[in-house]
Image (tube, rainbow, N blue to C red; front, side, top):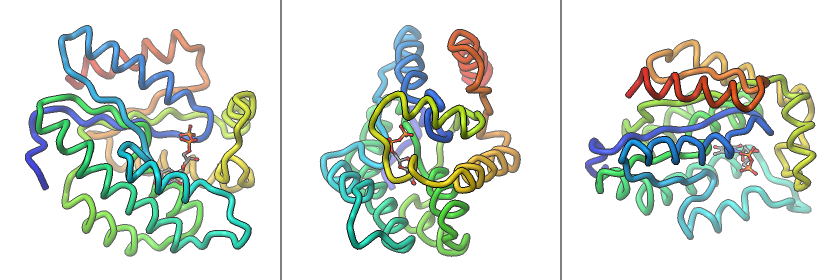
Length: 209
Ligand code: TYD
């Protein structure tokens, strides 16, 4: 792993339609106003190779996609993203804001698809090498609300098309992870009006940094 100690690594997580992308640009602008250099990126994707893997893993394949293929592609994209984008930006002293990261694999592939925790630990150890975000903002809201918002956007991906039971498992997994790692996580009520969500985000940033 490269020296990634200079910049801060902030990840945004949550179910579908939680408002992460809006929050990501808001946080970028807030950090820049503090004089920080900021890289805004996303997963799956965030480098040319990782974006190519994104197209594969989010694609609708007639033959379907097994949980094994899905989780390996997510981590393959993450390995490329870390080496090409995240670690170099942090080493340059930039803050990195990432729309989804490894917690999404625990929630979606782990709890959602049933990939065993020991397999996720192996992949996480192999790909992340102990590297983790300093701060993870979990934008939490009831799945039916999030899906209604996501559908308004138009494009529905394979995960958004999943059952309500799947979305509930994803939400529960995120909340459980936040509960067990409070020093890294902050839970934001994403069902609140935008101004309230942004105020909550600023409060967390001011407290943690
Ligand atoms: P995207 O259109 O970016 O969704 P959103 O706007 O909700 O973030 O699609 C990313 C999808 O990939 C999202 O539905 C969650 C899923 N995903 C995983 O299943 N595992 C992962 O490790 C990551 C990073 C994303």
